[in-house]
Image (cartoon, rainbow, N blue to C red; front, side, top):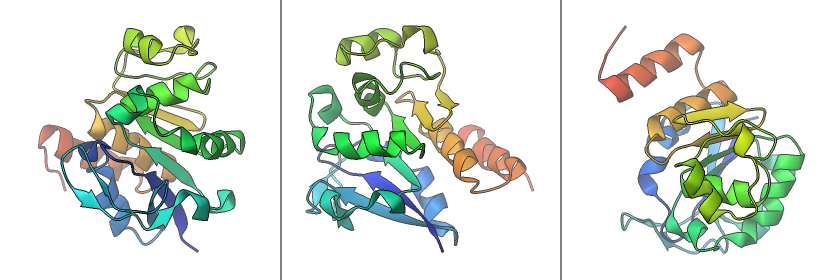
Length: 192
């Protein structure tokens, strides 16, 4: 049975932040990508791409989720997308992985999910400014991407590092092939 990776889509999501990871996962025989939005209706990415999700929030079952991916977008900064709070907390409490990039890291910070884990974001001051309830300063790392326990966080300028951390977490490829993929997309280095 294929593992299911759920990607939350919303109006204005940062399409490039998931553009490196989704094709690789989609090619795999091991995983199904499930794109969902709050109501399953078509949405527009920040780049103007119109997407029709395959599912809606109320159709999801917690036991089906093997990984939850939260792309960035300005909606997080303005307090939108709160309809997925219960789902996000439940995924976290079950110890299932959550991957958040850019402004979505501030959402996890606002929920208090980063307080006791190593994590990153666009900047510590950014995180504190967007998420007033955040109090995980001591665990903040000035890095492009960080994985600790079941949480993957990434800076908004690090979609390739974000993808690499996700690939490691789900075991998409072995370590050597993940590194080859990373070198190709990050540095343009092709190796056999």
